[in-house]
Length: 111
Image 1 (tube, rainbow, N blue to C red):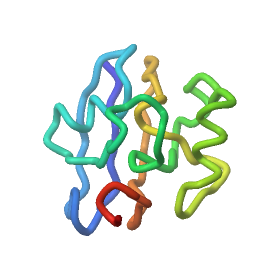
Image 2 (image 1 turned 135 degrees about the vertical axis):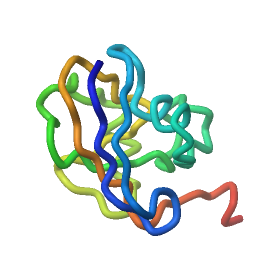
Image 3 (image 1 turned 90 degrees about the horizontal axis):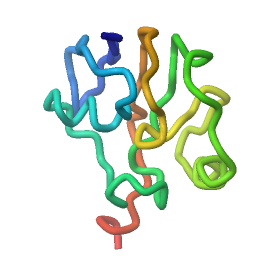
């Protein structure tokens, strides 16, 4: 089982964490199953950017993002070349290190 190393996030995971996840599972689902409450306003259908993460290590082990994900990521706060939507990032057999950005754009909660 691959491990996901989550770097500290002030609100969601202040101490950081290391979790195990199943290959074939989305990073978003793995985080939620392990009580890391990452936002996912669109119910994981690639229609928002609230589950935006940055892959610090292991980026190359993920399948490339598709055009729909890339279009959504263009709207994400703090976009960088290693940005992904956690709902669209499916784990393989490699460990990952991720960072959950400090801010997210959630139009549903921000009005």
